[in-house]
Amino acid sequence: MRARDNTDRMLAWWRDVGVDRVDLAVRRPRPAPDDRGAIWLWQRAISLTDLPRLLPWTRAENARRADIFARPARGSNWPVVFLDDLAPADALDLTTRHPGLCVHTSPEGGCQLWLSCELPLDEDRRYRLQKYLAGVLGADPGSVSGEHLGRLAGYCNWKRRGPWVNVLAATRIGRPITDLHLHGRADSPSTPQRSQPRGHAPDRGDTSPSAREWGWVMGALQAGLDPESIYQQLLARARLRRGADAERYAKRTVHQALKRLADLSPPEAGAL
Image 1 (cartoon, helix red, strand yellow):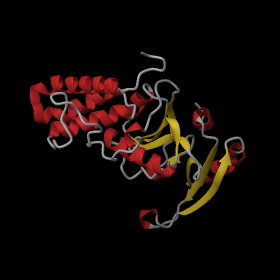
Image 2: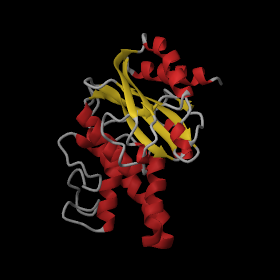
Image 3: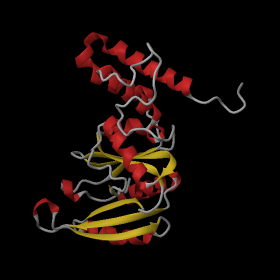
Image 4: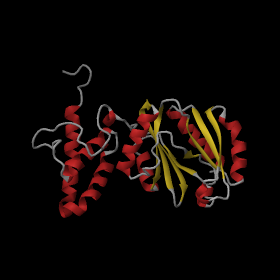
C-alpha cells in the first residue's frame, strides 16, 4: 500500500464515523533537548473535503523531517475517542469487536487507536471516557486530554528515526463504545456502579480486591468493551492472588456482571 493510500484510508474512516473537520499540525524540529525548540504550524477546522489540497505541503514538510499530526477539530462534539501506545495485537483485537482505526506509529511506540462512540461527545466527556479506557486497556495515561493529536498515517515518524506510520485496520463492525458509566457516576472504574443484592456481588462498602474487580468489570461492560477481553484482563489480574482458582473466579465474575446488567436493563418497548 502506498503512503497516500494510508492517509486516504484514515481520513475515510473518520468521515464514515461522523468526523468531517480536522485540525492539522506540523511539528518542525529544532536542535534542542527534549524537542522543546520545535516549531508548530497549524491548520484548524479544515473540512475533510478541503484537506487534500494541503497534503502536498505536509508531504514536503515531512520530507524535511517534520512530524505530521491530526485530530477531530476542537470546539465540536465528535463520536470518537483516542488511545495511545497500545500493543498492536491488543489494538487490532479491539478493532474486531468495535468500529476502530488502528494506526501503527513505530515498532517502539506501538499503535494509536481511534474508537467509534455511540454518540457524539464533547471534549470533557471524551477526556473522561479516554481516561477510563486507558486505565482498563493499559494505554498511555498521558494521552487522554480529550483533544489529543494523533499521527496522520502515510508519513514518516521522525521521533522514532523515520519509520512509516501505517493503518493496520479500519473497521466498521461491532458495537460502538458507550459512556454509560459516566452518566451521573464517579469516574473511577473501581467504584461499583449500583448497589447489589446480598450474596450476588460485593456492596459499596466492601473495599476488598474482589469488590474493586467487580466494579472494574461492571464499568468495563457498561463502556461497551467485549466480555472476552474483560475476562482475559481480569484473569491476568487475579492469577497472583487466587492461583489455580483464578480462571473459575474470572469466569464467574464476568458471568455475574453480565447477568446483573441484563437484570437492570429497561424492557424493550412494548414488552409486558
